[in-house]
Length: 155
Image (cartoon, rainbow, N blue to C red; front, side):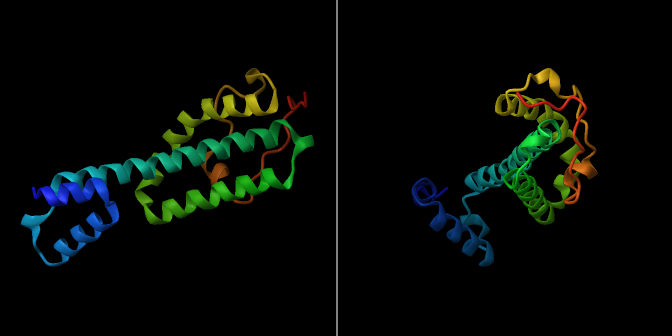
Protein backbone atom coordinates (compact mmCIF):
# COMPACT_ATOMS: atom_id res chain seq x y z
CA UNK A 1 0.00 0.00 0.00
CA UNK A 2 1.17 3.50 -0.77
CA UNK A 3 2.42 5.21 2.42
CA UNK A 4 0.96 8.46 1.10
CA UNK A 5 -2.54 6.91 0.96
CA UNK A 6 -2.16 5.50 4.46
CA UNK A 7 -1.03 8.91 5.73
CA UNK A 8 -3.93 10.56 3.89
CA UNK A 9 -6.38 8.11 5.46
CA UNK A 10 -5.11 9.07 8.92
CA UNK A 11 -4.99 12.83 8.32
CA UNK A 12 -7.83 13.73 5.93
CA UNK A 13 -10.57 11.16 5.51
CA UNK A 14 -12.49 13.25 2.97
CA UNK A 15 -9.58 13.59 0.55
CA UNK A 16 -8.72 9.91 1.10
CA UNK A 17 -12.32 8.90 0.28
CA UNK A 18 -12.45 11.08 -2.82
CA UNK A 19 -9.15 9.54 -3.97
CA UNK A 20 -10.49 6.00 -3.48
CA UNK A 21 -13.62 6.86 -5.47
CA UNK A 22 -11.52 8.32 -8.29
CA UNK A 23 -9.32 5.20 -8.36
CA UNK A 24 -12.39 2.94 -8.48
CA UNK A 25 -13.94 4.94 -11.31
CA UNK A 26 -10.67 4.86 -13.23
CA UNK A 27 -10.40 1.10 -12.77
CA UNK A 28 -7.05 1.47 -11.01
CA UNK A 29 -7.79 -1.28 -8.52
CA UNK A 30 -4.14 -2.06 -7.84
CA UNK A 31 -3.72 1.42 -6.33
CA UNK A 32 -6.64 1.17 -3.90
CA UNK A 33 -6.08 1.30 -0.16
CA UNK A 34 -7.89 -2.02 0.29
CA UNK A 35 -7.12 -2.49 3.99
CA UNK A 36 -8.59 0.87 4.95
CA UNK A 37 -11.52 0.50 2.53
CA UNK A 38 -12.46 -2.73 4.31
CA UNK A 39 -12.12 -0.97 7.64
CA UNK A 40 -14.34 1.90 6.49
CA UNK A 41 -17.02 -0.40 5.10
CA UNK A 42 -17.12 -2.34 8.36
CA UNK A 43 -17.34 0.89 10.33
CA UNK A 44 -20.22 2.15 8.17
CA UNK A 45 -22.22 -1.04 8.70
CA UNK A 46 -21.69 -0.87 12.47
CA UNK A 47 -22.62 2.82 12.49
CA UNK A 48 -25.90 2.21 10.65
CA UNK A 49 -26.82 -0.68 12.94
CA UNK A 50 -25.95 1.36 16.02
CA UNK A 51 -28.05 4.29 14.80
CA UNK A 52 -31.15 2.12 14.40
CA UNK A 53 -30.59 0.43 17.78
CA UNK A 54 -30.08 3.78 19.54
CA UNK A 55 -33.17 5.31 17.95
CA UNK A 56 -35.25 2.25 18.87
CA UNK A 57 -34.10 2.54 22.48
CA UNK A 58 -35.02 6.24 22.60
CA UNK A 59 -38.37 5.53 20.93
CA UNK A 60 -39.22 2.74 23.39
CA UNK A 61 -38.17 4.94 26.29
CA UNK A 62 -40.60 7.66 25.22
CA UNK A 63 -43.42 5.21 24.47
CA UNK A 64 -43.04 3.94 28.04
CA UNK A 65 -43.11 7.46 29.42
CA UNK A 66 -46.18 8.20 27.33
CA UNK A 67 -47.94 5.09 28.63
CA UNK A 68 -46.91 5.26 32.28
CA UNK A 69 -46.97 9.00 32.94
CA UNK A 70 -50.05 10.11 31.01
CA UNK A 71 -50.56 13.27 33.06
CA UNK A 72 -47.19 14.53 31.88
CA UNK A 73 -47.69 13.93 28.17
CA UNK A 74 -46.60 16.96 26.26
CA UNK A 75 -45.79 17.96 22.73
CA UNK A 76 -42.09 17.27 23.28
CA UNK A 77 -42.77 13.57 23.98
CA UNK A 78 -44.97 13.25 20.90
CA UNK A 79 -42.36 15.10 18.86
CA UNK A 80 -39.55 12.85 20.11
CA UNK A 81 -41.60 9.74 19.30
CA UNK A 82 -42.41 11.07 15.82
CA UNK A 83 -38.81 12.10 15.16
CA UNK A 84 -37.38 8.73 16.16
CA UNK A 85 -39.91 6.93 13.97
CA UNK A 86 -39.10 9.17 11.00
CA UNK A 87 -35.36 8.74 11.43
CA UNK A 88 -35.64 4.96 11.73
CA UNK A 89 -37.74 5.01 8.56
CA UNK A 90 -35.08 7.07 6.75
CA UNK A 91 -32.37 4.55 7.65
CA UNK A 92 -34.61 1.63 6.62
CA UNK A 93 -35.35 3.28 3.27
CA UNK A 94 -31.61 3.58 2.65
CA UNK A 95 -30.77 0.13 4.04
CA UNK A 96 -33.88 -2.10 3.81
CA UNK A 97 -31.97 -5.20 4.94
CA UNK A 98 -31.74 -3.71 8.46
CA UNK A 99 -35.49 -4.31 8.84
CA UNK A 100 -34.85 -8.02 9.45
CA UNK A 101 -32.85 -7.09 12.57
CA UNK A 102 -35.47 -4.83 14.17
CA UNK A 103 -37.23 -7.46 16.30
CA UNK A 104 -33.91 -8.45 17.86
CA UNK A 105 -32.82 -4.83 18.29
CA UNK A 106 -36.12 -3.91 19.96
CA UNK A 107 -35.92 -6.89 22.32
CA UNK A 108 -32.35 -5.98 23.29
CA UNK A 109 -33.12 -2.26 23.59
CA UNK A 110 -36.19 -2.74 25.77
CA UNK A 111 -34.45 -3.41 29.14
CA UNK A 112 -32.27 -0.34 28.56
CA UNK A 113 -35.33 1.72 27.63
CA UNK A 114 -36.98 0.61 30.88
CA UNK A 115 -33.92 1.79 32.83
CA UNK A 116 -33.97 5.10 30.95
CA UNK A 117 -37.69 5.58 31.58
CA UNK A 118 -37.39 4.65 35.26
CA UNK A 119 -34.52 7.07 35.72
CA UNK A 120 -36.29 9.93 33.99
CA UNK A 121 -39.76 9.37 35.46
CA UNK A 122 -38.64 8.44 38.99
CA UNK A 123 -40.91 5.41 38.74
CA UNK A 124 -39.54 2.05 39.89
CA UNK A 125 -38.46 -0.21 37.04
CA UNK A 126 -41.01 -2.74 38.31
CA UNK A 127 -43.73 -0.34 37.12
CA UNK A 128 -42.94 -1.27 33.53
CA UNK A 129 -43.69 -4.62 31.86
CA UNK A 130 -40.94 -7.24 32.02
CA UNK A 131 -41.35 -7.96 28.31
CA UNK A 132 -41.62 -5.57 25.41
CA UNK A 133 -45.32 -4.59 25.39
CA UNK A 134 -45.45 -3.31 21.82
CA UNK A 135 -45.29 -5.10 18.50
CA UNK A 136 -42.80 -3.92 15.93
CA UNK A 137 -45.69 -2.64 13.82
CA UNK A 138 -46.92 -0.55 16.75
CA UNK A 139 -43.44 0.75 17.51
CA UNK A 140 -43.00 2.00 13.96
CA UNK A 141 -46.60 3.11 13.30
CA UNK A 142 -46.70 6.91 13.20
CA UNK A 143 -50.29 6.88 14.46
CA UNK A 144 -49.75 4.52 17.39
CA UNK A 145 -49.53 5.91 20.90
CA UNK A 146 -50.07 3.51 23.80
CA UNK A 147 -53.11 3.88 26.02
CA UNK A 148 -52.42 4.89 29.61
CA UNK A 149 -51.52 1.93 31.77
CA UNK A 150 -53.55 0.91 34.79
CA UNK A 151 -50.19 0.99 36.59
CA UNK A 152 -49.64 4.57 35.45
CA UNK A 153 -48.48 6.85 38.18
CA UNK A 154 -46.80 10.13 38.75
CA UNK A 155 -44.33 10.32 41.61
